[in-house]
Length: 162
Image (cartoon, rainbow, N blue to C red):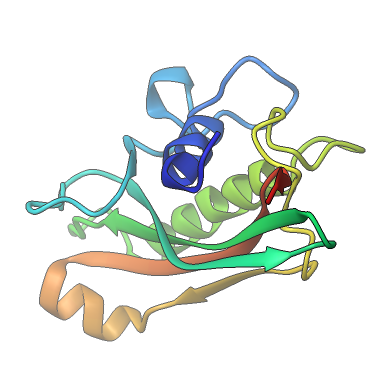
């Protein structure tokens, strides 16, 4: 494993199905139609989407000969909305909140295992925070016909000798 594949490893975890955690991909009954590593040149604006990004890498020394890379993960969440006379924007916001809750459950991981399927040393543990910030729906609905949010959390990678 290297620091270069951390985004791909986390994307694989978010796409995992068949365990005791909520399935996120729509193909497995989840709410997200696209879960992708990195932002694309032409984002899928009409699909419920998670883009996995890494805005920060800390290559920190854990001991005299050990390095423990830490990443800040940033998930860009996009929820397209088509409001008609029979569907309410309030319902879309609740659906988005429910989908984000399932995402948080997957980030937390199963009881007693925070390694995201042995992909990392720990995820969402140092600091013990998963932060989600929603964009103003008045703005995003007016400009993009979407609800948007961003989730942030840290991941500690497996230590390496240095």
